[in-house]
Length: 374
Ligand code: V47
Ligand code: SF4
Image 1 (spheres, rainbow, N blue to C red):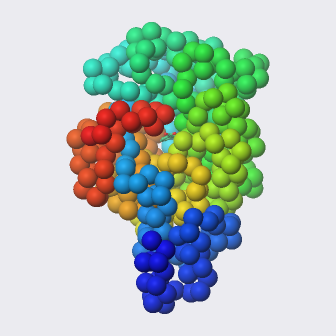
Image 2 (tube, rainbow, N blue to C red):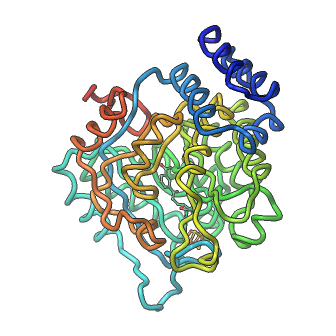
Image 3 (cartoon, helix red, strand yellow):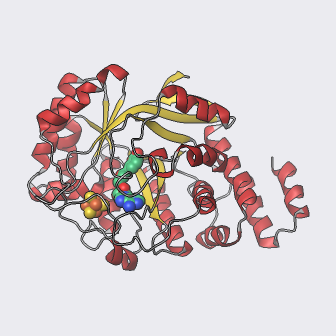
């Protein structure tokens, strides 16, 4: 591969530094933060696509993963005030909701016949709900759907639910694991740079706290996902700093399954004046993430956020996971202005998207075990 690509790059008028970085990536070496920033600043779309594809093929071959899942969003009432959030409401405010355990279990049950293998649960930080409420929720769901895997609660929710119950993170996570939690979603990471974090989500779990909750989960045998909210007020060095902190933790624990870049959507929030990133920037971001995070196995394009067409295109930029069928069960991104107003994808649609981009669809469970090659 190195021998076929490098001569072509050399003829293409690329700078010597970009050729050197390409050489490094092609030979399987890790790039530095400075090189990552340079890729963001100077790497053209086709250059990044070729290199990201090289890394994705090394890790995942031609496979693209998807699953059959639904989301449960127990409440959008939240004690935090993230400036980018279009979803949060105060208690009693128009548009707020809070569902009880019975209602959530009924919702889960109503999707049982469609063969879901995963329930993803994320919501606001409700002031009156501690870890015992959420542990009971998991127990009740598992009573009726014992084979479905539950990926639930961002580190921010875990932090708050443990504090409300005056419980250590380690004990709280152990309790949730006992109740049926198999994995944590990646939300709440936003951007780790402390100065920016103070501007966009001042009262959220801080960066060290987020990383520590994921470290603790990994130590307890609970794998997790990771995310980065991009397209807000950060520059490329903040993005690389964020990726670097994830890469370092992954070197330490190996517990991250996937990285999911989350594109800032600007409808109806306090950052509405900021223009959204272009599709080209989205694709460049996927590619640099794939190249830089050489130790996180999966890169996910979350189609309810970017739309199915861009998600399909992202498969040429290092992405190997399209999330799942969703079945119109999430509001976070439709409330922030995603064009996917009622996000639903059949498995036929997902497999057609994957095949159409030249890859092999693989249905997976939450832990990336293969269910069947579709
Ligand atoms: O933490 C909120 C983000 C996250 C906006 O692990 C926004 O498989 C962009 O955790 N524009 C929650 N992003 C979502 C989440 C998630 C989603 C998909 C897959 C997985 C996974 C996890 O949503 C929040 C925040 O970063 N968010 N508002 C917005 N306006
Ligand atoms: Fe609350 Fe999450 Fe919205 Fe922040 S992003 S205000 S934590 S619901």
